[in-house]
Length: 276
Picture 1 (cartoon, rainbow, N blue to C red):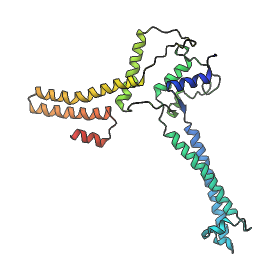
Picture 2: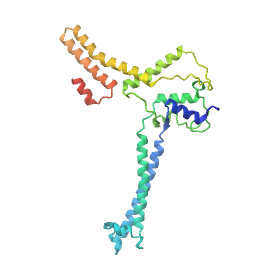
Picture 3: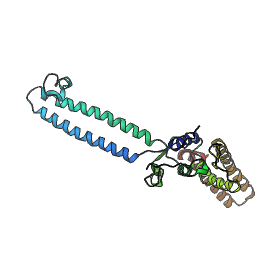
Picture 4: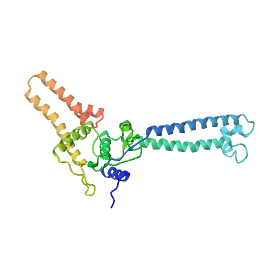
């Protein structure tokens, strides 16, 4: 069977390795919303002009503001009907506008892609030794154009992969710079593998999220346990009341900082734990 290439191979990597990263195109979406807004504003002005015209008639038209039935059946009875047609036109345009707003709101709530994940995806696309090495001629992924994964679009990239674990600063630090430092160190001692698509071999290393997050949870638990224990041991050896007060203040501060870094606790929860 012929090996997948191009978009098909990239799609397989995205789905299998949880790198579903795409652009939101927020600027284009906002421009589209502005166009809708401009159309609706113009339609509103046209409706207001028609309503003002009908009020000046000495007939049933002057009753349209207070009688919906007369207004909605005005065209059937050959009494103009321009105002009602304009109102229906606004109704249809509002449906499109609100649908666009809802979809834009849903897209903006999708998490932003992590820079290291975007960097990894770009590396995989360009490097055959990682199993990628894909050649694209279109401007969407080809450097001569404006590739969607280049740095200028980094704030406009979303990820559809839901990463397990917490999203606190401690987890981001260990799963980001610290983990990637470990990965670089590991590659120094690991012999490169000859990339062979037919055998499925490459230099792409796989780390299970459950293992990484398990180590982070253990380290976080140890840090949380050590803070009060170390303070108790320090107080046991210090006899001076002034130094004891300084130690209590220092470890209380350290404990509150640890809560803020290791957990996603709200300020009120940090205050409550620190006071306790």
